[in-house]
Amino acid sequence: MYHDMADELQEQIKEDREKHWINPHAFRDKDILRRDETHDQPKLWRPAFVRDTEKIMHLPFYNRYSDKTQVFSLYKNDDISRRALHVQLVSRIARNIGSMLGLNCDLIEAISLGHDIGHTPFGHAGERKLNELYHGNTGRYFNHNVHSVRLLDTICVQNLSLQTLDGILCHNGEMELEEYRPQPYADFHILDKKVELCYTEESAVKKQVPATLEGCVMRVSDIIAYLGKDRQDAMKLNLFPQEPNYKGNIIGTTNAEIINNMIVNIIENSYGKDYLRMDEDYFEEFSKAKTENSDWIYRDEKTDRIYQDVLNPMMEELYFQLLKDAKSMDEHSIFYRHHIAYIEDITKYARKGKDCPDYRETPPDDMVVDFIAAMTDDYMIDLYRHLFPKGRYQVTYQGYFHD
Image (tube, rainbow, N blue to C red; front, side):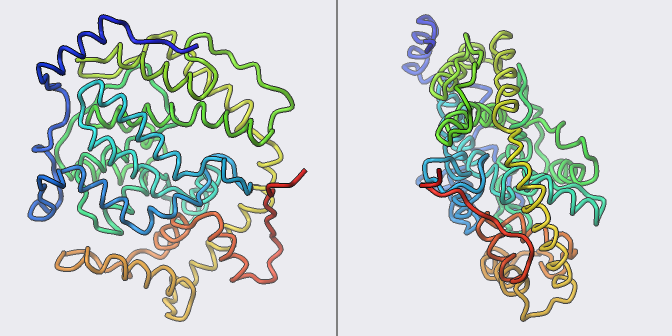
């Protein structure tokens, strides 16, 4: 069932647009903050946050979205979502909401397209394993949203805006809320403290709240984008013995229903306000739908065994081999040639003239995490085969014609 927006609100929005109404709660381009204010000045044809979007999209790491697991690993199936499609869907949904609410859609797009750029290969399972290895060696925590900020801000030195980086840091699409209220700030020192706290305090990552309404829109859109899409993909892969009996009398059960109905309800509850909100019954079903996905999709025992028995041990062997190379800085090693030299090459212009630390001075564990997190699924498997030609772990993909 598809819900429609109330006629009264539709008329009000039309009238407001005719009057060129400006939402006072939208983030204004002129208030953008960058670390280096002398660079990246907005142009008429490249406004403030458009520059952020283009910087993100033109990074080589953006290409790697296309072979990173969204939910389903080890399938050769071009119809199944990869992380590249996910960030586009998030951007589309978030811009739809943002446009109706009169928010800054350029800022929304920048946050959306950059929010997962620091994600590991093999989805959240890969993230959990990399965190286990990193924390076991350093006592610090790895989280993909924090690493997305590190990649864009520290490693690649893109001079992105505080507002884009904050939205990326605070997106945490695993935590749904009935109401989203931004907590504004305008100081890079605060951002840096938030980032560092996520490395040192395990629960800190769950406490981050976006500084802008645009960041709040992207955060809820992240969940909307994957909730129904994961169901759609699971059906295509025949992962259910029968069609699940999803409950969804309000928000719907299919991808299209969930997207439409959640967008409509959020707009109806948030138009002209300084917060985002959904109805209580919508929130209850929204949360229940996530639980249903977990029960029906994310807790697949067969897939979990592959992670535990094959992919996690592969990543562990890679981690400690690469750590040896990082400590030796052997210029003939794969680590040096395909990571250190690679980073230096793609950032040589970004770092030029800036007072940036030499990447080679990065702690070895951090460099290894940077390398592994940047890998696609196939990259990680190929690197394992290259470094351990007689390694005991083998990965088999399920092909198109597998019965």
